[in-house]
Structure formats: structure tokens, C-alpha cells
Image (cartoon, rainbow, N blue to C red; front, top):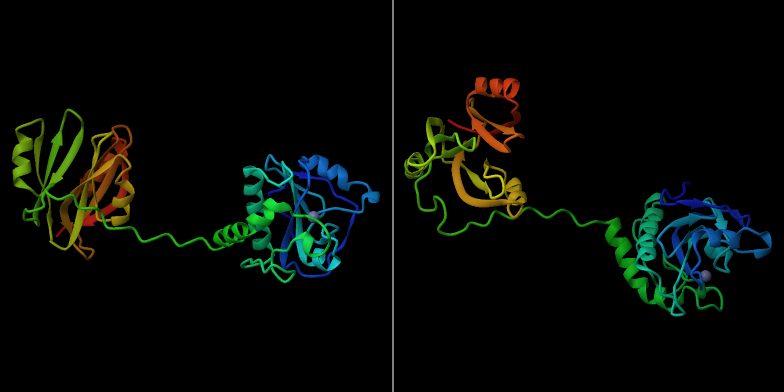
Length: 320
Ligand SMILES: [Zn+2]
């Protein structure tokens, strides 16, 4: 049996017995006062006190341990309960029993940790001693765990269960196509042209002869046909508004991660073969200029990566 790694202070109380039952739940208590975890440890230290808890949480969110989990603490006025549950004393700041946001966060974290280490797959509150979460007042005439934690118990149950079973990461949505932008009505496939701008060190790839024509009137140099494209898998073109870089990717996930993160989606900027051909297009990145380059030429990859500081980012897509 293990103890919580979330503990930052330990003072073992003599008020305990060997645990002889399997841990099946948790009993949150309130301190009926705003004690630090050190003060709480001080209170549980003398045998004359005849009381203890497994853990304590201060209003600053720090977690203390007074009774290791393989021992039964003396917290809930019930040997039956304390043998089967881990008990947690939480500092409260007023007579309603309000606990701080930091204490709440630590309570949730500690409960999740206790569940995970003890094989408790989900928690519930049944309103009686049969629930995974129980209250002190089910076993004795006491206000514990106070009005605040009583009212928040359903939220506690929900939050623990949500963290024990995090929702799967949703499938990325397809990129939003902005109507009327780049290449929407134009014929794709055929040749991918490569241009170079010596003023900002950027390469641009486009299948659009009209775009080539207009760029050549500006700062751009023609570097010829970079590769030939099938019309199978769309390559998404993105523009980085901060660095001025362009990116071409067939990954919807990458596209969606980029969009809104300095990158603007410019439309379908070419096509890749659906199968791995013998003409891969390599993707390179230059961290100094913060620019990407794509090339079908393996010797260019070799020269740029060994002599000019570029990093290979692997195969981007396939030409024909
Ligand atoms: Zn209590």
C-alpha cells in the first residue's frame, strides 16, 4: 500500500491501528477551523487527543500526512468507516465551512490520486454509508464535513470521476475553407512551381501559373518546376502572419493546430499522391530564418542540413 506523492509535510500520529480492510472510498472532513497542516499535525500528535486523519489540507492548498494509508486513522467516530476509507481533514475559513479554492483543488487532486493508487475506478455519493464518498455525520452527531462540503459533494464526485475518466481528444475538424480565397476556382494538379525571394529568404510553391506570373513581377525569382503532382490528396497551404513563412501540409491535424496560432489558412495549395511513390518531397526548416523549404532533391536536403543549418522534417508528401 502506498501513500500520496502530493504530500509536502508529514507528522505521523500515534492515534492509529493497522488497516485490515481494503480501501473502498474516501471521507472528507472539515477541521471546524482554519488550521495549517502543521497545526493539524500538532493536534494529532498526543495520544491523549485520541484523534487523527490520514491526510490534512490547509487553506493554502498544501497537503499533510498524519496516518499512512496502511493504517486506519481515528477520524470518523467509526472503526467500520475508517478501516475502509481514507480520511482527509480540510481547513475551512468560516462557520458555513467554506474552504478555499486552493484547498478545493488539492482535495480533488488528492481524491483522484487515492482512487488511482487504490484501484477505485469511479466514485459516488449515496447519502448513506454505502457510497464511495461518506460523511462523518453519518456515524456521529456532528456537523462535519460542514455545510459547504456537504453542498459541494455532488460537484466533488463529478470532478473526481471526470479526472479519472478524461474525455478522449476529439477528432480535429477539417480546416475552414475561406470562400473566394486562393485557388478556389482554379485547376490544380500538374506542375508545382518553386520561387525564391532573396530579400526575405523565403521559398514559395504554387501550382498556379498566374500567381507565378504576378510574383515574378515583384521580388521573386523563378526556380522552375519543383515536382509533378497527382490530384489525389490535398495539400493545405498556410501563411504565418508573424514570420512571413509559408507551410504546405497534408495533415489536417497540423493544419488545425496552426490555424489561429499565427497561421492563416490560404486554401488547397497542391496535391500529393495517396501512395508512397519513389518521389518523396522533403520538408526542411531553418530555425534562424524561421522558414520552411520543400524539395524533391535529396542532395539539396543533404547540402542544406549538413552545411547550411537546416533541419530535416522528413517526408512531407509524394509527387509523381
Ligand atoms: Zn469529521
